[in-house]
Amino acid sequence: MSMIKTNNLIFEYIRRDEEGNVESINRAIDNVDIDVNKGDFVAILGHNGSGKSTLAKHINAILIPTEGTVWVKGMDTKEEDKIWDIRQSAGMVFQNPDNQIIATVVEEDVGFGAENLGVPTEEIWKRVEESLKAVGMLEYRTHSPNKLSGGQKQRVAIAGIMAMKPECIVLDEPTAMLDPVGRKEVIKTIKELNKKEKVTVLLITHYMDEVINADKVIVMDNGKVVMQGTPREIFSKVDDLKKYRLDVPQVTELAYELQKKGLELPNGILTVEEFVSAISKFM
Image (cartoon, rainbow, N blue to C red; front, side, top):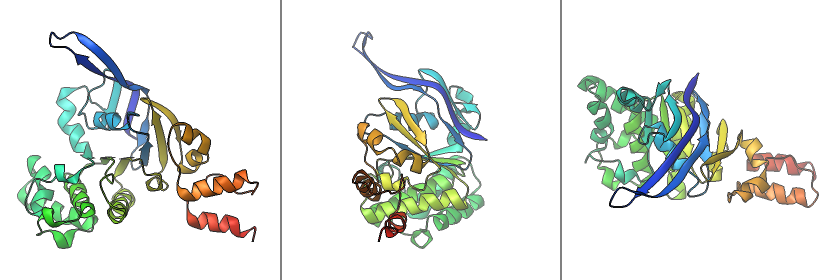
């Protein structure tokens, strides 16, 4: 079953002068077709300006297509009376956790979104406890968010979305402002939500090592989808990725360079363990 589907999606940023005349049109999304199934973990890659964040904002109906259609759980984002249901179905987590935290106590912050949905108080506290447990932050429920690390704040932001019981979470570069430890915490949390809670995940990132466990990878460039496939299929095409100004995981790059030197290694090695296993045959 499709959770998110787009058909011939086009979005244009239109700049106007003081009189309202069009000065310039920038096409940020150009005929994009994607299909994300319920329960999938899909990663979207692309350099800055490739259109990936603009695409993310369509899934939460923050932006509405200039042309084409976006469906979330079968609901057309252009239908105004469906916006509330769409935003309940697809929660959004942004780059900077400080922009999403509004309360002075962790548990109150996590319950804020559910309260706005009109969820009964008793149910809110149940959801707060479940969500904090799911992201490994239950012991911090009475702490001030301001005293948490970047990674902990982002996990609280994810818990706040989880408490609203969405079936899909869209994460727009959630680890961009975090140190390596914080990044690892957040990615571990996202993977567990996908596997244990069966939440559909759409992860937008420019860190290649964050996508190796995804079900599917979508690569964007200049507003278009230029590559789609499993992580192994995508990272087997090192030259193509470099053409789109993207890197590959370090171990994939090492294996690729050794292949060029004549070593017969399999394409698309993704982990150190795979590399060690492949290289040991030559020892």
